[in-house]
Image (tube, rainbow, N blue to C red):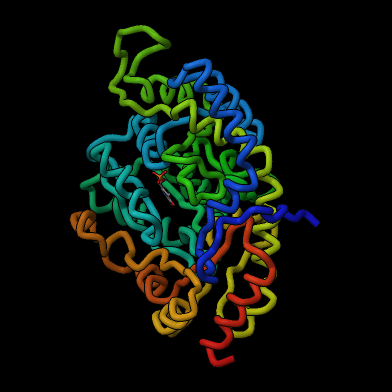
Length: 387
Ligand SMILES: *Cc1c(COP(=O)(O)O)cnc(C)c1O
C-alpha cells in the first residue's frame, strides 16, 4: 500500500500533541532533495522566472492535464490575475459560494467587481447548482450588475459539480473560473483539478495539499489567449522582457526558490495524496455512525486538503479535542456575507452556509500522520461524542 515513509528523525516532541498540520515531518522526509534544489537556484542566481519555474509549469500542466500552467505569487493573486485576464470589471457580478475562504470573494472585489453569494450543498459543501441558477436570474432581474462569471470552489479538496455549473454558465453566457486552491490532485469524471473548468486557480500556501515554503499559486487554462494575458499581467503587464507595459499588471510571479521546493514535493505528491486518502478512509470507517463524515460522490476524488466532519455540538467537541491535545480547525466560522469586509454585498437566504459555520470541524490530516495517531484522534472524537 502506498505508505509515506515516516521520517526517521522527527523533531523532538516535548508533548504528544497531534497537530492539524505538521510540515516539519514532511520537511525531515524531503530535506536532502529540497536543499539540493534550493542550492541549485542559489548557484545560478535566476531568482525571478528561473528555469525551475518553467519546469514546474510544464509539470503542473502535465499533472493536471491542462494545456497551460502559469506559476504566480499566491492563490489569491491567481484568482485576481485570472479575473483581470478575463476582463472582469466594475459593474460585473461574479457568483461565488457563500461558504469558503475569504480570499475567494476578496479576489473578485479587488478587480472592482461584485461577488454574488450562492448557497452551498450541505453534503458536498460545494456550490449548489440550483441555488446558482436562482442567483443568476435574481441578479440579472435586479438590473444593477451584469452577470459575468461563476467561481466555484473545490472545498476541502473535493471538486465542485462542474458539469451542472457549466450548464448554468452556458445557459446565461457566463465564464467559469475554478477556485481550485484546495483541490490540486482532486479528480472528477477522470479529469484532474486544473482541467475541470476553462480556467482554474490553485494555491501553494504551505498547508495546501501541494504547498511551498512561502506564498505561491498557479493558473491553469486551456485557452492560449488567456494564458498569454496571464503571463503579461503577472509581470507588470509587459510582453516578454520588454519594458513596455501593454496592459495593467502586477508583481505576480512565483519565486524560483519556491518553484524548486515545489518540484521536490511534486515528486512524492501522488504518494502523499494516497496516504491522505488512506487516513480519510480510516476516519470514515470509524466515525461514520457517530458524526457526519465527508461524502465523496462516485467518480470524484478529493485531494483532502482538510477532513471535515459535521456535528451538532461542534464547539463542545472542539473544546474536548483541544483539552486532550488534538489540533482541529473551524473552516469556516463565518460565511462570506458575515465578514465585515463583504457587508456591502450581503444577500439574504444562505441558510445552508450559515448552518455549516456552526457544524463543521476539521480533524488532523496530513501525509505524515501515523496510524496510531489517527486512532487516537478517532478515540477522542468518539469519547467526546459519548459513543
Ligand atoms: C487558500 C485559499 C485561497 C487563497 O490562496 P493563498 O495562496 O493563501 O492566497 C483562495 N481560495 C481558497 C478556497 C483557499 O482555500
